[in-house]
Length: 242
Image 1 (cartoon, rainbow, N blue to C red):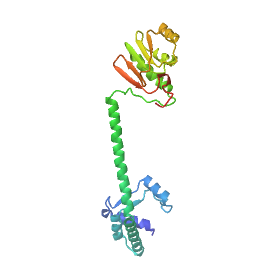
Image 2: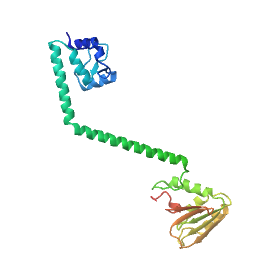
Image 3: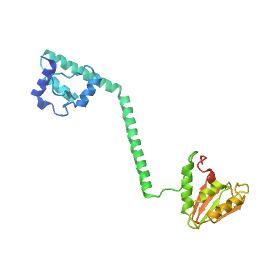
Image 4: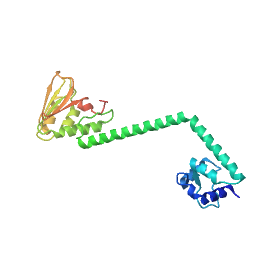
């Protein structure tokens, strides 16, 4: 008689000895994975059901229900297999311990990361977007949009302290609202002429430019209530990593 059929028959006859923690049926995915890893794990073509797997306790119980010389030999082989498995586990206990430690650390790291990300999103939801920005080389348009947005918020007055004011700077200031006065403090060597100022005032009054060497850093002040420290000259915003 085929050993597998005999084994299955003995199990069915003594099914009360094989609770769920002693024996379970493989799923289709589990069986396919087993078959891919072991070419000898080939399901009987005549069988319509998935194979069963036995836990260690189930194997011991299986040995008690098998009878006959062939069954005895198979029981001995089963016991030897579990003996080798126990030796393998014992000999590699340190490796398994390290794997568990790594998995634990990975879990803790993931949990910590999830908590930090959650806090970031909570902060973003509860706070307004910061007006501070960092622009890298090539982000000219992004810098232009931010500056014109700040300029456009002014209701009464704009004060710009920038040592390198030129017509490109005036192009940004031109985005202000009508009636907003602009005061610019720049270096004597700045490339802006009286004619440039007159042309600007003819269309976007009123601009006042004063030459001075009293300042080094660049600032933009809106309505005496908002102040911005600007890393690069307005005309160079987005052209340098500042």
